[in-house]
Length: 455
Image 1 (cartoon, rainbow, N blue to C red):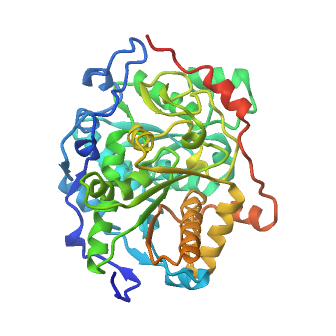
Image 2 (cartoon, rainbow, N blue to C red):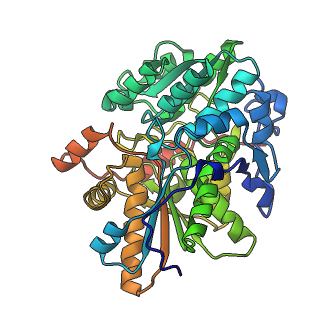
Image 3 (cartoon, one colour):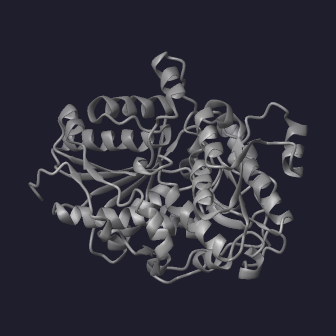
């Protein structure tokens, strides 16, 4: 492997990818089709038209390997892209490991995370088709702030339903959404039938992404000038994020290295897919034997304890049925600080890859994730988001395993966002006020009794 001593590998903006990579073109079998929530039949483009512009529907159903990035989207990307690939040398030294640890740093975007990679694209395509407003949900606020930014740049209105517990825990992400001109409401709310029905059952609910999705979808369906926008899970969202991995491949080429292990945290799956999918293409082609590790919290163990089954993407059962690992659409997770990882389901493409044995799922307790994040901050200087902390800790564990085995392997993880607006979580950790939580199997079993029964 390379003896190159560069720590930060930076591409010129002229080297930024001009096409996204669509992994559907290289899968050994077509993904299971999404189903209409009413008929149970495979979805048609017309079924999705009330929610999404046709360009995104075409991308969602596409099997074309590469899709051009529009010039206007590239122009906005250049505000922060290409993002750096960084060798974590001080962390390597602290761990006394022979492993080479790299991270792709997506915290350099204006919103501080990877989310604008798809928010910008979605805002562009909606504007091109005459849409005037986008509505969405957000967990920790990273997606909501990214879409607020993108809508501002493309002259669209924006409405965000933010999971109540995160709305309370993360006031500055809420402020970011408002600074960029969007409206933000804690979910569940009294503004929608879905929200009112949940509040009637449990006025003190912390909320969930499934509930917030129901509210956003309801608003989009009832307003002709409004479309729905999703920050993870769907194929077109994962497609837009592959700019991350495509850049990383070029950067590894500059230092004559290549990852043995690719790691990302997963809630819906977009940041993991963004880094991993371009490298997975090499594995699918038989050129590499890289391992791919998707890390989730023990408090929301979708991949590690959920079944692979058709389920709704939202609590009110308004969305299409997709085949994915799921904890049940009625699942309400605890208020852990990794708010972006509290979704009951997982991206269908990632679910298929896990089911096929190409991606390894791992669940981490909250305290271990924060312990890794503090180690990373004290060596590399970056305070990471609680979501990214899961990837950090798993990279540390892989590096320690390499030390035990005497293997000089190359590890890369996606540092999907900084934690500057998550200091309340760090305060709680440092004060000994955070606790591990493993979701009870009885609660998971009960949620799964409500999975849809297909003919």
